[in-house]
Image (tube, rainbow, N blue to C red):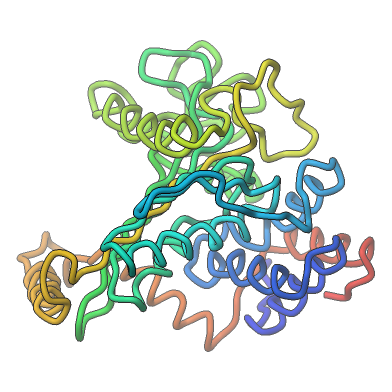
Length: 358
């Protein structure tokens, strides 16, 4: 069973919730828009379904609703941002703005972030660069739910990467992906619907491939992109490791098995080597390489040629990264955002607790 809510309705509700925990009006709006961008783009696992989780982190005093975000180290093209334990939904856009400003000045901007929290979908942050004729890059580490190839121990997060590239007449190219076979949020959706997980998503505590969507609760782990060594899991493991290093070792955040967990009830890791969760964001000005109009003309040509590629039987055309999400965003802005009943009830209970009516 699902209920449909308009984007404006959910935005107002979400802003109000963030205001109730102490966020400024500006930060509440940024956090709400960042969070709801996931619902609009069809990434339901990372949208308002997680709102209660952010509030619980605030209740556990792991989120600072009024962070004093600042640059603690910089060069003309790079910076390290301390998020002051703020919502990653607010910290990451702040850091991306720093990267964009640096790119405006010197061609590219690269910002590594420490002392932050879960930042929603990577796509929102990377796409901030598009309106400036820039390529945007965003990645983040996350709490350890993923077993490296040949391991039964959880060492990495789902560690997503997004690259957003502007085009001319064609929509932007937006590749937004986890470095696991599937993001944990997709597993949570299966759990809510009492469905099994596809083969290759997870393993049990002994390292055997499992289809139990609840395997993580019993000591299992998510699998890197590829699923197993024969299908390339060592590549997914390497990509996840790169995200971890860029996001955390470069910034001074926690890394590997020490990244703080998203559920507030899960104990914090012992002997943590850094501060909070880490992100890495980048912006590259197109005209630092070639004229922006020329580049976008050729991006259009690239996209059109790939769309017209010969397809396998039953498929109309080849998808360009970002197509499904863009189409979903248009559909949901017009027709509303569907929420499953368990999420609706969760939001209703959250609203009652904080005095905000859904």
